[in-house]
Image (cartoon, rainbow over the protein chains, first blue to last red):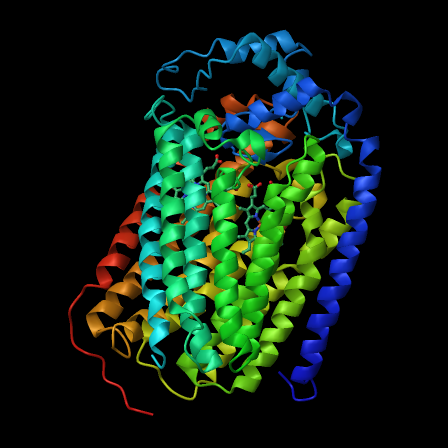
Length: 145
Length: 460
Ligand code: HEM
Ligand code: HEM
Ligand SMILES: [Fe+2]
């Protein structure tokens, strides 16, 4: 690098830039958190949905599926599964409930998690709640996720 | 090796490499499960294998970073490590925590692991990359704090250089942002938003500080280039990393229920993120061209240059490919993401750790550089692993393009599983490349044991 650009200048850009943009990130974070209620479907965030989220976590569903595009890419997107399954929590519950223990020969299979009916209901309600989140441009692009 | 306590790095590096082997073995299992869905089902379902693969990656990179710091800091600070004992104790604690966690994934169902580790008290499990039981997360925090204390005291009471201070800053950042992993709100949008404060602000923020300082250190050592020059580069690289990367976080806030302005902010700033990686490439080639000596450790120079190039390709080019909101609308969460994730992690963080190992291991074994045969084999393993990673990335990109078209773009979108079957050929080819990667890794390990003619060099 040329001599007119000194180490001191480089250092000041580093400190100044880092502090400035960190503060901007904090500012935007505050604004985002404040405006979330408009889109985050929190009005439907019930106790049951929270229980469903916990079940989603402790069974590591994200280890195969994406949820709003984040997660693993081995199995279908579930952020819109409620819509894809004809807005039926019953269909979602039945699907999870009747997974064969030994899988389907030769195919990618979902494990049998042995959930109770109450747990199935909570999970289905959680997926319905996530489907209700208003994503920009209504992502995913179509019903296939 | 100037200070005895630098030798502590060795145990950290050995553990890192051993866990790296585990990571890749599980990677090849997953690659097979992609095309033979029932492989090892139901004993080892895909999600378990994936956790093992990604968590081993994170754990071994942390071992690699800490080992690198233990080697670098005493020399830069011109004093022995503050407490070699503490570094050794923390090594065993971290290894124990890491191995127990992986065994936990493999031996009991995940839900049972959550129960055993009392996840309900402070639920943090079950989110991608952050699957570790809460108790393991606490263990990581303790180990990292002790580590920070140790290198911090060494630096503060020793010589402060730009390199060791930037490294320390990066490590403090690593610890601070990891704390967001303990925040797990029920609100899914909030959860996702702050999850990225760990993942993105690590790999596209503070880890870049760590990477740049390690690279700068090795480059000074192998080229003898003036410190002033290197320090100026280092500052400007990390300046660009944070200026672009902090607001670049916005490229993850396009479609998760966050405000629309993120599409602009995220696109614009993350489009700048390749700059620091490009500068690292310029920097590395520049100083190697201006070198004042020919270091006998040719392999280390190759790794250093390779890191700069591959990080730019994986993070810079493959990152840019899908970072603009109108593109990401279609590619979000597809095999394109996986392609980028692989080359970026390998090119930046795997390779920078292997660079440090390549430079420091011979010194810790009482040589200036490994023998001629060993270096030759190491360089072969460099090419095998690097080229197979390029192919893994290309095959996944191919799979991703077809996936995006069939599932998201065409007039008559097909279901996910139908599309997956149509792109199986790409996955088969990825698996072949993965096996070559594994062979390269075996060769890499073998190179440490190869006997041969000692390198010739002129004492400075
Ligand atoms: C033998 C070579 C490898 C194979 C066959 C392999 C295979 C895989 C597979 C199948 C996945 C899961 C994708 C999904 O979620 O559907 C994955 C994820 C991942 N692997 Fe590998 N892998 C290999 C090597 C590596 C290496 C060397 C690294 C690190 C440098 C790595 C880092 C990752 C990461 C970060 C993820 C998560 C990706 C994401 O979420 O986008 N893998 N790998
Ligand atoms: C060494 C640095 C980097 C590493 C290790 C890395 C790694 C990753 C990984 C593992 C993911 C997948 C996360 C998940 O599982 O959801 C990801 C996503 C992403 N990365 Fe990077 N990345 C790096 C740098 C960059 C850069 C510089 C850019 C932009 C120029 C970028 C753009 C993106 C984007 C847009 C996504 C989201 C993909 C999606 O929507 O599915 N990355 N990165
Ligand atoms: Fe990112």
